[in-house]
Length: 195
Image 1 (cartoon, rainbow, N blue to C red):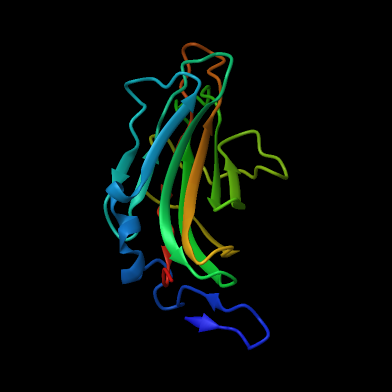
Image 2: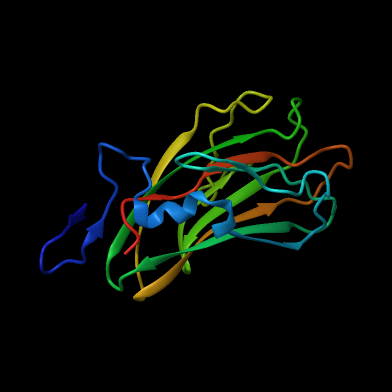
């Protein structure tokens, strides 16, 4: 859906009838192979490091990575590109939920930031919330596939061409050697159009 007057930047939005449907131009976001996964810092646990993937519309990432380092954070970055037109406003939906890494709540935090290019669109944390890092909805343990928090965010494209969408996940140091890190499930962005 394209909105806006001659004096304003157009808004490219998800239609109300299908708020989580991915348009054909954005269908690649539902393919795991379209996303680049990068790990930096810390020390990712080999057994929990892989990013899980639930196919569907929208597809969902399952992030259960644990950081073995007791002194530094680890970062997991998921990126994909979409075509954009400079000056246009793009709106997309995503769903997110979190869960303790252990049922007794002794696990350590995980945070996620959603970006379009360099624009920060959303921040959330699994624990220790603040004004900058609000609490992500936490499900019962073990992780329940429903319910999720629904979010809608928007950004103004700075360039005509490709814009990188990023999910940047920061995994806290493991302060207790016996504890895990929390978990996050987040759907891929659902856009009405990709140009």
